Length: 192
Image (tube, rainbow, N blue to C red; front, top):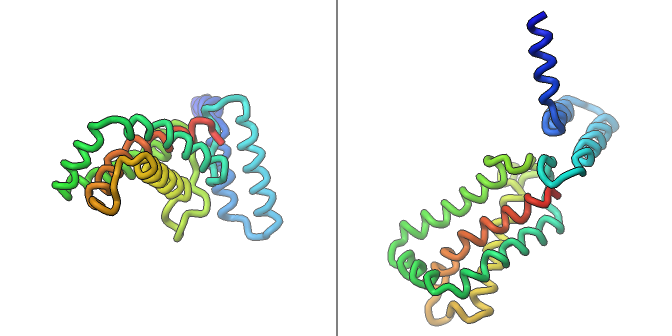
């Protein structure tokens, strides 16, 4: 009887995330196309069950709305970096120390990955990864944030790609750190 009480306690803690895990496990074992479609519909219904709040939703895929959210977060975090002179100082330092540039780029991707998939701010699922390995949401967030950072710094005359391409790239890389973090947070917080 003690085992039953333990099982009941585990069931009380079950949520949509647990249901999604079970449905994904089931999806891997079904053989017919009709059964796969039924499981996919059940998964969509489970996702819709969490419409009551921003947090606790299951996030799958990466669509236009997600891209727009990431772009908005990028812009909000990039603007202070564009107008702050310290960004250029750090960019110049990183330009002189290639190892630090590499570390900055790796740390940025690691932070974005951590925000999206490790920190469990939301239950973010990988759907149809690129080449079967790279999560689309990760690729989208880092690409959009880098693009926004590059466009803002170039458009507002804060980098000169023709006269100092290496320094420009390093300044943009430094500014990309908070921009990418802003893009990741902005993408997952609305819970789409």
